[in-house]
Length: 347
Ligand code: SAH
Image (cartoon, rainbow, N blue to C red; front, side, top):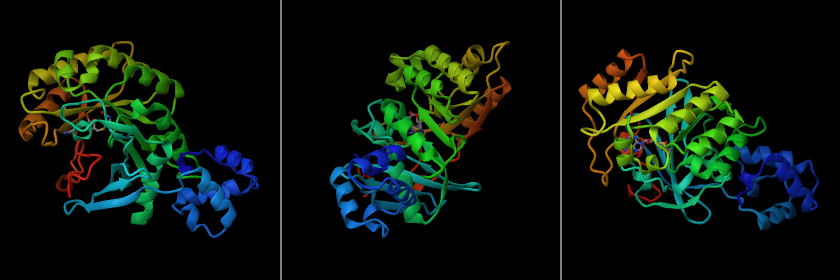
């Protein structure tokens, strides 16, 4: 277990068990979360360090490769973890500050046809401290403070539910990184039972749902998860999430030429969203984020042209659905949506 996976009270309990004074926990916790590793701490004795190192992995993810986009300054890290597995994280600069896109698993087992992260399958889940470690390591390397987090890297966060929830709690702690829930987005391919569970926690994070098709036939073709939880059930869960949390939902829709990008597709999408979520009695705020598909060697899918994307957005808007087209960052370093991998593919 990584030391960063411990909540303050868990670190306190462990130190007590190791015969150390309680007050040490606060000192150690806040330094760790600032990016000072245990071995670098000057106010913690050698004996304490050795005891902790005997019980826990006290390392941060290490930078195995770092690429910086010449186009927009986006930085993509290939991090290696204590067991040698690798993941990627991306830091993007916006007017309002820095956003990091973190990975939640080593690989992914969801099998979406357009996504590079799932090509080689899933190796293992990340611990909460390994998700958090990506933020700490990036802040330390760049000398910046990150203000927003998106769980949109490698992996399906709700397929690693407990560690994801613990990570959300850790990153939100005032004595730690202290990022507000409203500055965190979690993206899911639609694991319906877990959306209901998350709704019950009423954390004020933004839920992004990867929809990508308006009907079961098309969606099942490109997203195997749809065979377990179809569009109707997924939208029911979204409605419940909104009811429980009051947070609007963002739908991601990647436009693939000839697959899901026509005007009839857009009309069908507007119809199903309006029918399921915007009835006369409930008017759930929703938002569709259109992403022209980023080309991934293995998929063979082609991106829709600019005109088709604009037309798709306009069709949604004409039916009362807010739609925006996602800006692509880091395209010259394969750092865009769906391009992250657990292996060193850019070397
Ligand atoms: N597993 C989660 C988190 C990944 S988030 C999920 O599925 O939502 C990454 C986002 O990028 C998702 O919306 C995903 O569907 C989308 N995506 C994947 N491959 C893509 C590609 N090639 N082009 C554009 N978007 C892609």
